[in-house]
Structures are given as structure tokens and as C-alpha cells.
Image (cartoon, rainbow, N blue to C red; front, side, top):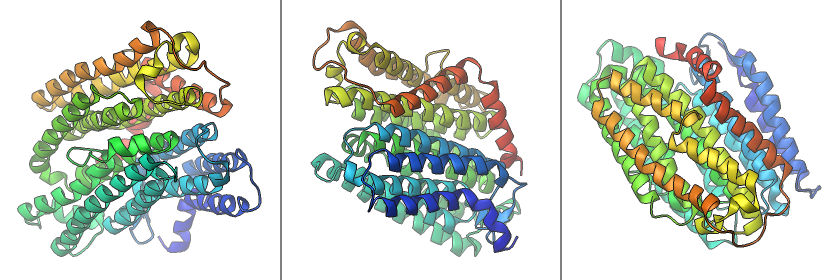
Length: 477
């Protein structure tokens, strides 16, 4: 397919870029807090409406640099949804400076473009470029509160760990080119299927590439940036980097490992199982001692990545279904939790867990929604988080990874403690601090959308599972 024919498959990215530039230029002349957000939201809606028209039978786009298969379209829909919810949350987040809103939404839309390109990349060079674009924008967003030392510190740690992991991944990509003579994933897949590669060399370069992608997913041991970056970044940005880059990271891992390097499954499955156990355990155990709710959710996010990796290790259709469902459920419940935190922090100006005492009496709606999201993260039925964990644990048992499934169950019990601790503060302790103030309408809309998703995905998951199964034609190719 030539370049002219390929362009129509990236219309959503072109729409986002056009709106991003328009927002940046218009912000020089128009100082309005909500107008850039409305334009950014319109961009996401327009890109989403055009997206179904981009799906074809695995077309090779731009000389095999991109692909339009069902797998990439699934993740593009997830990424656009995450971006739209983050924009709604941002419109009601008081900590953002009104004079910088144009630049903020310009960066958010550019991050969305990078995510769309990353999940549809079919070439390691394109994967690297799109992930780097996403990383650079994320570093800037994490440091967006320019006069806040914690924001600068968190962004610096984010940048340093990102630079290290990117260097490791790039070295692995260079070894791929030396071993295969190409960076095209389809060509690499054919060579692997024919056994035309040294298994030991391939395993070494896979470890290097996995190291770089583990940073995006907050997998052990490339997780250490997350707590400081989550705590220091604007909470709306924290919501974005907790969901968007993680979804992209898993999309790229699934594309590389389960399609192109699956012949080496016995080599990498044991390693990733070990990483999964360490990721879950480290995240959950350290989360128990946190007294800042953003920092607690940072460690929770690390643990959630460990659960997602369980389905990936299983390597079966059920495992892939579990991973994709878990990514969707995680996006819903994590965005909802951070949206509630913004609603509360707008009033009490604090992220300390003890300041949530008696929230159910001061702001019963926010307390109820936050409780639902935390219970879903804990895996309590009938919420979406429960089914996500059930699917990945069942996949692990089906594939004979019994120890991995047991570790997941034990970690889920540990995690329930610190989630319940927040709920205990909200419902059993006496109120203190400032009473709840007026609530932002955009945040309430965002929370209504995600809490509906969490409830429906848990109680009636069939539409979501059918959507996920339709995207799994990728694994049969």
C-alpha cells in the first residue's frame, strides 16, 4: 500500500494534530480555562468517530511501519477513551494554571498521537520513536507544576529512569538488526517461525527490549520512578500516566512477544512469571505503609501491572483475553479513583489519607464512588476488577502456572487491606477539615462514565468480552 493510500488510515492522528496546533495558537490570543479543554475533547470525539473506518484486514501501512489490524484498533479505542476522560478531569482540576491550559491540552493531544502510533507500530524503529515521543511529553506533563519542588523532583526521576530504560531497549533493538538484518516485525516473525535464528542471542535481546518496555508498565525492577512521579505530578497528569503509557506498554509487549517471538515462549515465560510475582509483592507490601493517597495508588498501580502480566505469562487465548480485559478494567477504575481524588483535593487541598476521615458525611457521593473504585481495584465482586483477576488467575491455572496464580491470590488479599483502610477512614472515622465545596461538572461527567463502565463490565461483561475477542484475530495471524 503506497503512502497516499496509507494516509487515510491515520486520519485520527491527523485530526488530533490539527486540533492540538489550533489549541496552541489560539491560546496566545484567548485566555479561557475551559475553551481549550472543550476543543481537545472535540478532537478526541472526532478521532474516535473516524477510527472504525481505519480497521481493515491487517493492512501494511507506510512500508510496513504501521499496521491497521484489529488489535491496534482495540488499543486505539482504549487510548482515545483514556485521553477523553483525562481531559474531562483536567477541566475541573483547580491546581492547573489558567494561563497554561493551551500548552497543557496541546501536550495531552500529542501524547494521544504518540499512543495511537505506538499501538499500531509494526516496526521496532517506529515503536521506539513513538514511545520516545510519549515519554518526552509525559516528562513535561509530570513537571507541569513549575513552582512545586515535588513536581520537579518526580519528573526528574521519571526522566532519569526513562532515559536508562530507553538506552537499554535501544541497545536491544540494535542487536535485533544485527541478528535479523531488519527491524520489521513481520520479517522477524517469519525468520523465527523458520528457526533461522540463534535462540540464545534472541533471548538476550528480548531481555533488553523487555527492560525498556517494563518501564512503561511499571514492572519490577523498573518501577521505582512511579511513586515520586505520581505524587509530584498534577493529579490529572497522574491519572493519565497511570493508565495511558501502561496500556501502550502492554500493547507493545503483547505484539512483540506473543506474535513475533512466541517460538521462544518457554524461554521468556518463566522470566516474566518471576517479574510478575516480584512486581505484585513489592507494590502491595510497600503500599500498606503509605500515608499519601496518590503515592498509595502509585504502588497499587505497580501491583496491578503484576496482575496483568499473569495473563501474558499464560500465553493462551484465555490469558490474552484476561490481559486485554484487565487493561480495560484498570483504565476505568484507576481513572475513576484519581477523578475522585481531584474532587476531594479541590475542597480539602490535601492528599493525605487521614484527611479523608469522615468523607462519607461531608461528601457522600464522592466517598461512595471512591469506595467503588477501590473495591474494584481490590477485586471485589461483582465489579470489573474481580472479573479481570478471575480471568488472569484462571489462565495461569489452565497453563499450569499454579504458583503464579497462588501468588496473585495472596497479593490480592494483601492489597485489600490498604484499600479497605481508606474506606475505613471515609466511613468510620469522624469528619475533620474543610467541608466539601462546589463540584466540577466535567469531573462529575467523567466519573459517571467510568463508574458506569466499572459496574457494567463487572455485572454484564459480555459486550466487553466480545469486543476483546474480536481483537484477538491478531493472535491467530
